[in-house]
Image (cartoon, rainbow, N blue to C red; front, side):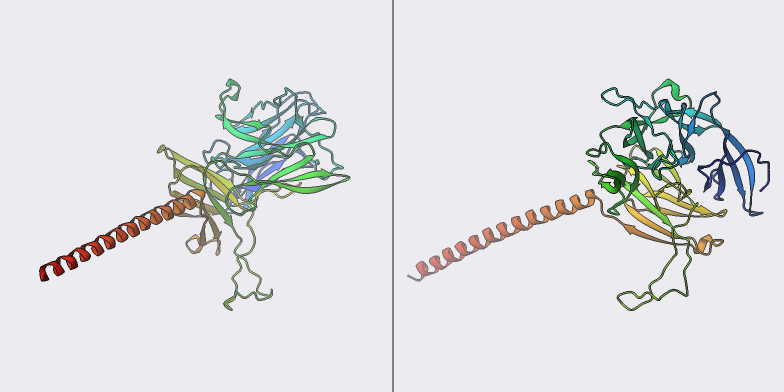
Length: 410
C-alpha cells in the first residue's frame, strides 16, 4: 500500500471493498478513530494507493459514529458514504451524514413522530449482539430508483422500533448541495411496532420487490419476523447477481432431471460495481449504480444481489455494465422486470463473461393477459351469436323456398 497511514483503525468498524472512483477496480474504505480513509486500487501493481481522508465533524462532544454504507443517494452513478452519528453520549441528538463533493453534509433528519415524540438512534452496546453498532441498511423499497433506509430508533429506555426512511427530494435550504434527503415513514411498516431490534431488506418472493425481515423481542429471547411489501402500483425493476464463476471439481456430481451434469457458478462475488442507463417516461436519462456485498462484518446484512428500481418506466434498459478488476462488460436492451445472473469468468476476458436473463411477469402483464382473454371470449361469443342467427335465417329461407315449390306444383 502506497501512502501514509497514521490513524488507528476503529473497532467496531465499517471497512469496505468497492469501486469508489468508477474505474471498475475495487478500492478500500477504512474506518479510523478520526474519520474514514479511501485507498484507491491500482490494478497495474495489484496494490492500493492512499487517496484522501474524510474527517468526522469537529467539536468537543462525546459522539457515537455508526457504520457507513454506500448508496447512490442522488441517482447519478456516484456511491456516497452514508453514516449515522450521535453528538452526545445518550444519542439524544442524532443525525445522518453523507459525504458528497469533498464535504460532509448533515441531512438534519426530523426524528419527531406524528405525536411530536422525539426518537433517536440506539446507544451502541458492545455486550449486545444486536446493538453493537448503529447500523443503517439500504434498499429501494418503493422501486422508484432511489435507495431507502431501515434504521432502529428508540425514544425511552428499552423501547426500540425499526422504521423505514424514504429517499425524497430535499427542499430545505440546509441541504446545501444535496438534492435528496431521508424522511421517516412512521407507519410504513405497520403493524410492526415496539420490539423490533433490527431490520434488513430481502426479496422473499423473488419478484423484485424488497420485503423486510426483522429481529423482534419475544419473551426472554428473540425471533425473526417478516413484512411483505405490497406496492399499490406496478413498478419495474432489474435484478442483478454477480457470481464468482468458480466450481469445485472434487464435490459431488449433481444431475438434472434429464440426467445431465448440473452446472455450478460459485457464490456471490463481493465488491463488483454494477451500473445501468435507461430513459424515463418523460424522456430524461436515468443512471444508477451499486456495489454488491461491499461489507460483511457486524451484521451488515447487505443484499446478496442488486435491485434497481425503474419506477413506472416500461422502457427497455438501454445498458447494464458489470465491472471488476479493471475489466467490464456492457449488455444492452434488457427487458424490465428481469433477473440477470452474470458469471465473470475468465475474469480477464470480459468478452467471454456469461449472462443469463430470467423475466419475471409483472402485474401489468398479468392484467394485459386477462384483458386479452376477456376480449377473445367476447369476440367468440359474438361469432357464435352471429353464426346461430345466420343458421336460423338459412333455415327460414329454405322453408320458404320449399313452400313456394309445392305451391307452384299445384
